Image (cartoon, rainbow, N blue to C red):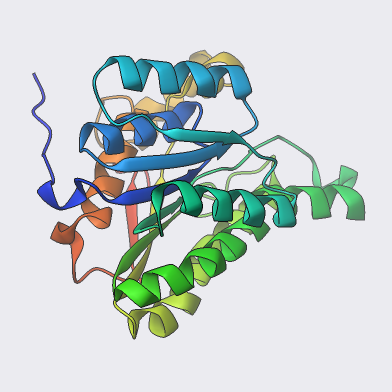
Length: 255
């Protein structure tokens, strides 16, 4: 049975996660709560998120704070983050997880569609970083983790706007690391491979997908949400104290 690490430095830390209700985000909410952290998260999946809050609380861990929030609405996102700070205090850790890999063809992309995809997958990352900066600066410490994707690195077709926005993730990380680092704030990218969330299994995992995994991953084990959460915990904890401006790829050796 796999034995996962306990990070004493995460106990009592305040964490904000976008897209925390399902998939990789759900694993993060559970994992941080298991470490004794105070977790706040937003999602548009109300029912799944409320059920997650219930499960975490009933398991005896700190009850997460959840709000429904459409992260494409930046004023609403900023207001929600400010409300959550009022409840649990300034954040020590930010995880920019929310994204949507809806398939699309280059010929079908309109200006409106482009703007909508960027509004989901790229724009909120900057404004959440902006929102946590002053609180982290006052503390003289903080950890920001931006979640990327290997999609553009392996030259996947079928979602060029998504690939563009995910390629920009590490640009944001490196663009902020110097400025934020002067105040003890670390900024890193965690880049997942093909993670077997329920959505991926339902929509995309067919026999051809199974063969892709066998052919491209060095490790035969399927990549699960917990594998991503484990890397994020390390970077959020004091154990990752001198890691910043870096990209940590968790993909079973695909790239």
